[in-house]
Image (cartoon, chains in turn yellow, cyan):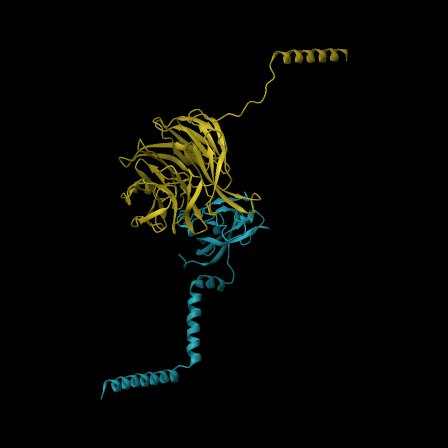
Length: 367
Length: 180
């Protein structure tokens, strides 16, 4: 007993001495987000946008969203992020309120809200929100189930109005503050928007695809001079605009007849991505049957957009359900596997770099 | 014969001809007969879109096989969502307290028992948190979100008091086409 008492006394003295040797710490002010660097990306989950430096896997902060947010739209010129969100007064039920929240780069906190009609689509589709070319107006897709688009002036923090888009959905911003939308009758519609955010004109392409036979994915991707559309069956279309004219290229093969014979199909929830300056297209591919357009890919095929042909294949042990290439000159390929893992590959050498821990990403966002 | 007299006689001829034709028609077809034919036409037109449903009702019972709590169950071929059968509901009814959406998307699935295609209405149950059990993403004949009536990704909690998505049921509307 005496030994135990002596030992206890010694320990308490030791602790006192140790405490005396350091300055007690106090809570410091919160960090602010550093200036976004090369290969910074966001993984968007149901509840939040996680900001990472993909080149080292470090996390730099988080943007809170509701579980009813289609995507997060960055606006680097104004150092803001935009998220259209639905809130219910009692969490999963109660009065619904839809707003466009504006988050700053510095604290990733909401600094403003704009009331918008309680009509937004809450599915994780990147093209349900778009920043128009003037950097001042944001377009948000609605469905009630009638389809329309709400326009928000983010400079004046005000709702401008609603543009009806019957039979058409998704927002593909182009030059002159205009945007295209994809239509169920196999066409694209161009909505011309004036400097105040109001519709000034609308035009349609001729029908160039058959939604029953081979629909185009509702995941369009921006290219250097327009948009790339890929169909469930692997036909690609380059789309560009000039004034109020839209041009749609002839279809070219992501899946050649020989590939089709071997049963190859695109698939996944972010199934293709484009490096705009390098003109490279990456597509997740799997062997299967028709109507497997959400199936994860066992391979990612790489195409030259200029040559319109495949130039490489990357095989994956764990199937891939989404890809996104960063836009740097030394780009990285973000890969979401079927179990929710997020991995980083060199987009040119295809070498594995690292795995980033975190909740499963519904979408990757580059900024 | 002056101009007025010619006009009067012409009107008289038109009146007489119309009267004779009307009387002739009345002798051939009774008013009740006309109304009954008109009624049949209207009823027929109204019934036309329901014909597949009527055919299914004409069957005694739909023979099915499989486990409705698995994504592989035949009715779920175009279902994207969570199964109400796993969440306290049935294949045609919502779990307690959830509100069925009156608007749905429609798929066409083949019943393995009789090898026939059936129209399936996928109705979402709404107003509660997502039931995170038995999540399925089947996509047979699924279309993109810009073609909503056949898009399984869309949440169909429209026209309900609360718009949050809970789970999905699969109701057989009727036979879609003949065998094969």
